[in-house]
Image (cartoon, rainbow, N blue to C red; front, side, top):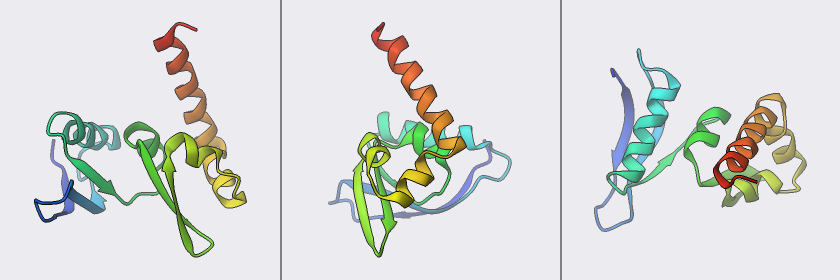
Length: 115
């Protein structure tokens, strides 16, 4: 897969086992990197803290999101962040890319739940 990333293994007494500060994907695609993150979360039951601006990765891999805005951090579920009324958060998550991911998510939920 050829992934190179800067990760820090944290104290094993914490639930957070890996902190990914900067991602260098080398020859791997962003989707391949996201699959690695999902594997770490599901198969190894690791909590991964990832710092990214990539909306595609955020929508594919995150169930909780933190956004630094107005000099403080808003933390919520992905759905909660998307619904946050802060104008900057709204513009970031509801731009062209964000809206495309939101539509994909809604379609997947309908397909999964059959409604």
